[in-house]
Amino acid sequence: MNTRTALLLAATLAACSSQTQDSAAGAPTEAAAEGQASSKTVKDLAEEVLVQEEVEEVVEEAVEETPTMSIYELEAETLEGEAAALSDYRGKVTLVVNVASRCGYTPQYAGLQALHAELKDRGFAVLGFPSNDFGAQEPGTAEQIREFCSSKFDVDFPMFAKVKTKAGDGQSPVYERLASSVDGQLPNWNFCKYLVGKDGQVLGFYPSRVAPDDAELRKQIEAALQ
Image (cartoon, rainbow, N blue to C red):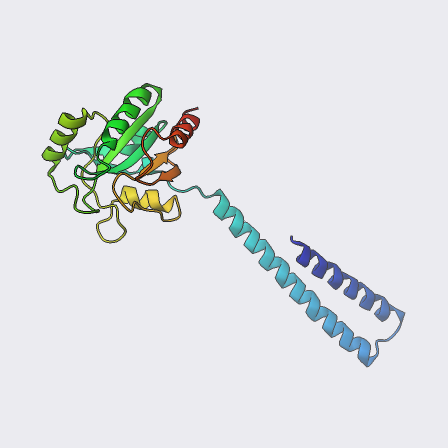
């Protein structure tokens, strides 16, 4: 109960108490009768306010206690076209990245691979999702993407089938879920990054310019691994 409601309730009870005392002293006058009617109306309103306040408090508590659905409840498809349950990463910290082969940020593949190799034994993984959404910079087939990543950057972190990250028809369920966890924030270019905790909840969003070895990103990864 908030302060406004408490004051209203107190005033109502006082008015009702006063009216009761007046009635007990003798037969009510016309003014007293009007006061009783008015007091009853105020009391009814106060009760309605109290009920509304209680309903609002219950709703607010329910919203606060309802967790955002984990991305580890979803399924995806590997770059080779095989079904992949993201539940395999439950209990791990992951960095989800929309990658592309012909982008100015493509050299970040090297940093992502280094990060994955360094921390994979501690329960960390980079998850790469190729996308042709920005500048048509990932036009290749799955085979071409795999050949590029392997030959240029020795990538061995998990790579998934090409996806659409942008909102609308055909959007990847993974990116829809990621965005819902950070106020609708979606990639605005290639190599944007979502840091995901062990429970599948998004811990942070990092734009393309944030390199894999960025000090703040590394700090947040280390904290999530604890």
